[in-house]
Every structure is written in C-alpha cells, then in structure tokens.
Length: 283
Length: 269
Image (spheres, rainbow over the protein chains, first blue to last red):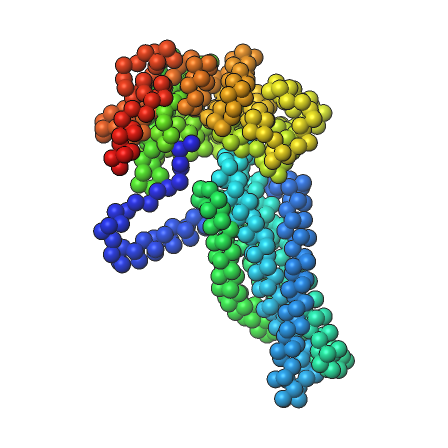
C-alpha cells in the first residue's frame, strides 16, 4: 500500500537556526490548532449525540474501575510519605498535633487531584493513544468510517466522558486513602495523638477544598482524554509511530496537567475569596 | 479517461491531485468507474493505487480536483448524506482491518447495528448468511480476529463489507500475503459476489492472477517520480489481453514481472 504519511522535505541543506526556530514555532501553532479543532469536534458530538450505553459502560469500567488499584496504592503511600517527611519540622515547632491538617490540605488541594490525573495519564492515556494509534495504523479507523460510524463519536466521546466523569471520584478516593495513610503513620508510628490529629484537620480543611480539588480534576481528565485520543488519531506509521504516540501522549498530558494546575489553583483560590466575601458565615 | 455521457458514472475522479506535505502522489488524475464493471487498478508499490481507492471512498480529500458520486461532487454533500452514500460502499481492506476488540460476529454485525434498527434475530440471520457466502462456518462467530489465519481474516472482512449489501465494492490488494490457494479462493469470492448481485467493483492489486481472473477493464498507474511533468499518470487502459500485448515497456515489464532496467538503476544508486 502506498504510504500516506506526510513527508517533510524543506530543503534542509539550506537551513539555518532561524529556519529551525520558525519551523518549531509553526509546528507548535499547527499542533495547537489541530488539538483545538479535535476538541471542538468532541464537543459538537457531546451536545448532539451521546454514545451507546454499552460502549460507554466498557470505557467507564476500563478507565475508572481498572485505575482504582493504582490510584489507591499511590494515594496511600503519598499520605504516608507526607507524614514521615513533615513530622520532624512540625516537632521542632511543637506542632505535631497539626500534622493532620497539613497532610490533608496538601492532599485535597494538590496531591490528590494531580496524582490521580498523572496516574490516569500514565495508565489510561498512554493505553488509549496506543490503542487508537494501532487502530489507525491497521486501518480500523477507516473501517469505522466506511461502516457508517464517526470515529470521534464512536471511539473518542466515550473515552472523554469516562475520563471526565470518573476522575473526580478517583481524586476523592486518592484523597481518602492518602488521609488514612497519613493518619496511620502519624498516630501509630510517630505517636501523634489521634484526637488532636482529627480536631485540627477538621478546623483547617473545609468542604470547599475537597470540591476545589475535584473541580480541577475534571479539567485534568478532559485534557488527558483529548491529548491521548488526538495522539492516537494522528499516530505515525508502524510500531514506532504507535510507541511515539503513547510516549508523547503521557509527556504532553503531564505537562498540561501541571500548567493547568497552576492556573486552576489561582481560579479556585479566587473563588474561595469571592464566596467568603458573599457568604462569610458558611465559608 | 472520464466517460461523461448520458447517465453519471457511479464514481469519478476529475483532475484530482493529492499531496502529503511536499510529496505529490497523484497529479491531475481523471478516472471514471462504469456501472457494473470490475475495474482493476494496477501499478507498482507507491504509485498511488490505495490513495486512489481512499479518494474514491472519501477517506481522503483531494488537494485539488473533485470526486463525484453518481454525478454529485462529494464536497457538496452534508455529513449525513456522506454517511448515507458511504453505506452503498463495501470496502475490503488490505489487512482486513477487523476490529480487534470484537468477535467475528460483532465485526460482521457492526454495520447493521450501527445503521439499521433490525431486530437481533434478523442480524444473526444476515451475519450467518454472509459468513456462509464466504465459506465460513457459524463456529467462527465467537472467535476474536487474533485467533484467525490471514485468509480467514480476509473472508471475515469480505463478509463484513457485504453485510449492508453494497452497490460498489472496493478491494485493496485482496490477495496480498495469502498463499496461492487462498488467493484463488478470494478471487473466486470476488467473482461470486458479482454473480450474485449487479455490483460495481474496483480492485487494487499487483497480483496478475487476480487481474486475469476478475478484470473487465484495467488501469495502470505509474509513479509520478518516473514521469515527465506533462505525462498522464495513467499509462495504460484496456483489457487484460491488451495489457499483456502492450508494446509499452512500462506495462509489459509490470505484467510479466520483469525487473528490466530497475536492477541497473538500483546498482547505480
């Protein structure tokens, strides 16, 4: 079969660093545009026709339920590590009893959402990119179109929905087991008083913090699904192309999660101040 | 090449050019497929045969020129119309392109489930009939594509392509990678498909046995890199007998499978 992969031949023998920089910038803008159009097509399908229940359930199971063990193990150990690493600093200041507040606020604000997202990008995102990439290389995506199914609607929308709907739940579970892990190490190994641990945690951590983390995670889930599916759909030829799609999917998702986390963190904080000014008694 | 007389051709490429990046694969190609014929497109690897097939089915969009389905420019069709028109097409992919995650039954039933509201009993019956048409027993229904041999995959792919009773069948290198016996089985199935229903077929191949057996008309494409700027990419059009009797060395060399001056070119390179 004729190769249909785009061939880049820009007379490289005459290139200088300015050409190289220009090509990089153009390639970046081109890639960003492609990603935006891809996300827009997902959105159009989301509002016009939801996927079949059977297809959605399979993806919810694969993406949500199968990710649970790795998220739970990661969350537990992060909570435990936080306790071990923070304890000495708190003890110097005689604030051991406040350890629970520090661990919990770190987990629900940042570590829970970010770690659940990174685990999802690593376990699910790479697998999605590799699976869709293989489907592209073996012409299965073309076969879908010939058989009257839109590949974005059939393959991408259920994956997108599964990521967006289930990542907040994975985040809450990572938060929960992390808090329990931190509590267990603090109280059973480091001899922090359990009553004070929970008392200060309760004083410092508000439901808003938990919901703020869940809110951020929805965007992480969306960006993971869009990047992974886009990489798979635009995969290069052969096994090398599939491998590159999986790797670049994780790297791009990871960078996007961290960059998004910064901006979403500011938005969540501003939201807190706004709500506090409007409902001081509740917040 | 194009026949633009009374009734429109079911499929027609008009002055089509397609490029990937800076590489042009097809240049100003015009080709009309007549209703009911079996058109075989031959040519060496990389000359644009599969790209021609994908342009005809709308899986690729031309850089320049137009693709017409029953006289209608494909670009003017709305997404729903395009999907509906595409259902008149059956496509046997080079590697069969069966969905890995589904069983044989689910693969063959896919188009029916996706595009019709037939009850499950009718779908079972149609799937059984299509599998029987390609000589496969109902016992393969529960198998995954990974458990099938190359020939069986091709036959399941053919059953899937035929499930929606298409008017036009596309075969992308149907015998590539198969043993001679299984190649002949596929050739016979192409003939049987045509005998059962008045289906228009377009076959892309470089297997001359297939060409002799199934072709009503042959079109030979030549790689752009070996042509002068104003030469047509279609270097031959006619029957199998005419191809074998052609005085054009490009055609005779291909149909007889002779390396000719290519070997000297490789050594020089």
